[in-house]
Length: 130
Image (cartoon, rainbow, N blue to C red; front, side):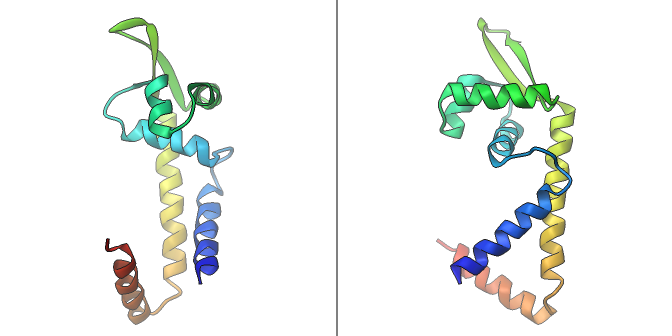
């Protein structure tokens, strides 16, 4: 059963990435982390939040910056530090990815009857309870 559920989740991820070229899981995590931050982040902060070494964060940031999805800017409080923030294109990509993911799930759920959807919701709620 776990394998089946994992397969459904993977199918949803593939569908979400269908129109989003080159967005790996690692790149998505960087974009999502910056999107959820209330301000631009230093590279070291970003690496800490992602649980990776700063060098790895730098590589991903380089790729995303080259793609126009995020931008570096000087830290106004420390001229030695650099901040990283999403660009409008990065925000748009996240919106598109999330919409694709939601649409893929809706397509899957539309195959169920309303009664089956209700049962599934009840079961998912039980699994989600701590």
